[in-house]
Amino acid sequence: MDDMDIMAAMGISGFGKKTKQRQLDPKRFDKNKREDALASSSGASEESRRKDNEEPEFDDDEVGPPPPPQTDATADGGEPEFEVSDDDDLPEFPTTHELVLKDHTKVVSALTLDPSGARLVSGSHDYDCKLWDFGGMDWRCKPFKTWEPVGTYYIHDLKYSNDGQQFLVISGTAQAKLYDRDGEELSTFVKGDQYIRDMKNTAGHVAELRSCAWHPYDPQTFITSSVDSTIRIWDVENKRKQKTVIVVKSKERGARTKVTACGYSQEATLIGGACVDGALHMWQTKSNFVRPSMTVEGAHTKGTEPGSIVFSVDGRTVLTRGGDDTVKLWDLRAFKKPLAIHEGLTTLYPSTNAIFSPDDKYVVTGAGAAAKGGNGRLMFLKKDTLETVKELEVNTTPVKVVWHSKINQIVTGLANGQICVLYSPQTSVNGAKLPLNKGAPRKATIEDMSDAVAAPTIITPHALPMFRDGDIARGSKRKREKDRMDPRKSRRPELPVTGPGRGGRVGASATQHVVQNLVRDTTRDEDVREPFSCEFPFCVFGAIMLRSSFDIYRSIFAIAGDRRTS
Image (cartoon, rainbow, N blue to C red; front, side):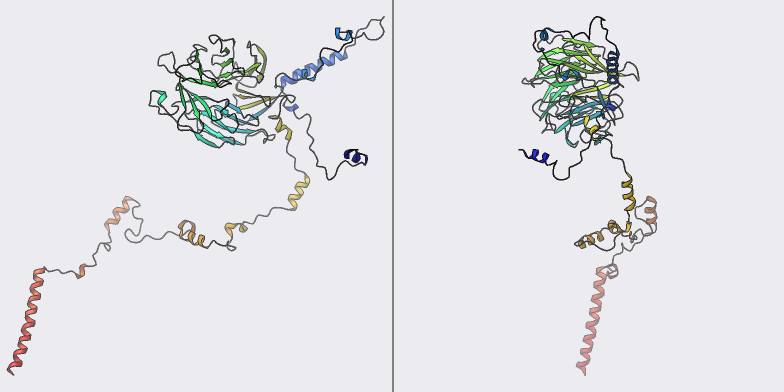
């Protein structure tokens, strides 16, 4: 007999005090349900209710309801071909519920999620980057860190590394910045010499950056594209110079163009770049990058800015989102013409992107509002034909779209500064569901108020260390002596001015300097040896001394003669 059975027979459920578990509200996700999902669910319930209320029609001659129709399998006495599962009730796209993150003031132009789906980094045209932690957020849904990476420059792109320990910030400057997981700056990569004509001879970009991409396997390597007509390969450990420079040459006059999008293939064998002149280029990573391996001129309309270039998981197709209101699918095996084109996608911001779904069956992109203040659309297209599968209306123009495979949630950056996180309680994991699992904060009770009144906080200013006269800590004698010599810490009054210039500060103004020279104190200019110096020439002084010596000798001889006569 098991121990648990014995305890159950004795009526003992366990030992010790059982911790009280918090009961979550089963309807906590209903308030975040989208209106279109509510309408569809209500319509389905009305239809089912109508069918239940309908009375079945029976023949008067028949007794009882008619038997159910028999299939071939049931007629033969065998089992049905398949079992009905609950998976048919699950939504195809995680768009039934939404969580709105409000903190930016302008269009959200960049988004990235770490590989685990726990943290989100957003960039905007309000020059700010914000770090969001789904596990650390409460019902208010606020970021835990906000900062300006490069002052008053737009944020164009953000990318987390594959290990999730660092992320790149691409702004309107020529220098990429690298941050750690907590938003602390690790390094700023060098800017090139803008006066050098040949871009291969510069150590870094010389113009505005537009996009970036990490190596699929190596967390120490990434690429950046710029309007200086280059794609540069960087090493994380070397911020002084790039590893390789890919100079993109245009067929137009001047042989330069703006590279607005770049990306790595899934196998890291190709590097792709989309340009403003309409060209789409592919380079083999094992080549010398002198010329592209594959090129399509006129892939998009000339003069428009492509927003993204994405490689599929199978490595055969490439998806591009152009500024000419189109999404195009390309086959790398037949690269001259696109496999499929979807038109009519209004593009209001150059950073609008398109992505593949995690199962590689669908394409998701945003379409701008047709009129000012109108609703935007989030488009779900079939991958092979780019036909519309579903349209999802949002409050304003969607710009950036990210579909995370691990948490199965779609994060969309909108033009009004909001971040919309679409999810489904059935198919999504963590992410936007975590703040709702915490619930609202506990309200203050009468017991809490009574405790505050019974034990009020008494503030005594003279008990603070800055007001104490005694109780000086040991070992601080030397520190006190040192502070005593410091005029700032000891608050010693300013000494009066002595010597030249007394009565006012010397050199305080030009007028005081002139007045000081008018009544000048010459005490310092007097020579102390002057009273002891001789005013006569040396020859006169010698003659006087010689005359005085003659008088002395004469008086001596006179005295000696008087003694001799006597």
